[in-house]
Amino acid sequence: MLTRYTRDFKARIEKLVFRVGGFLEKRVFEDIYEKWLWLQIKDGPFPQHIGIIPDGNRRWARRLGLDPTQGHETGYERIKEVLNWIWDLNVKYVTIYAMSSENCRYRSRDEFNHLASLLRRGVRELLESGEIEKRRIRVKVIGDLSYLPQDLVEEVKKLEEKSSVFKDRTLTLAVCYGGRQEIIEAVKKLINDYEKGVVKISDVTEETFSKYLMTSDLPDPDLVIRTSGEVRISNFLLWQTAYSELYFCDVYWPEFRRIDFWRAIRSYQARERRFGR
Figure: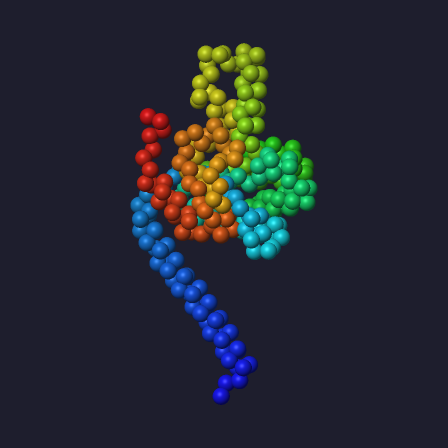
């Protein structure tokens, strides 16, 4: 005869087995679904340039009862994983909205310092891991770097210089970046050149203006992916995304899976890109 203790123990074991079984069943289903998605997208076309707004790190952490810094830590690791998925598709350009100008101006000092420390870690890993040499990646950092510690700015410049010889892929990190601010700075440069006689009013076209932006040597994004369910681009590449395909994913960034990424690619492939024509 089972005692109350052994009945409780048996019930707990059965509950644990059920949970594990459910997890394994879900994993098997996701594996099958992932393969099915790949069959749908594998023949392309793939975007040439993908922009990513990796949103929801803090909310993911709060939902799990974790410190918000853990959300940023997990989000940082997810960025590295997602970049490998993207490079494996032979996408040539990726731009990641790493820190907005609002992040740098309005977040608490402790949170900003933590974000800066993650940027420092990423820069050092790229400098030391051999990844940029293996993938032949040029790294470009755009934004107002005056918010960052000077020694970190120097490391960023070192990474840009070291990677400048590579042309196969370009990784752009938008740090303390804002699209409105970028446009204002471009207008100032254009006015300065006009006053010097470098350009005439009649010379100013969309193509001319684009040359004054921080992304002057990059094509506009074909696809922009934003996580967390928010449906906005939050001051990200305002000029450049005029005709980008936008994909809003209803998961927090630390939960973003290959399935979610391939769904975004499938959505991109299903759209007819007419650029307003």
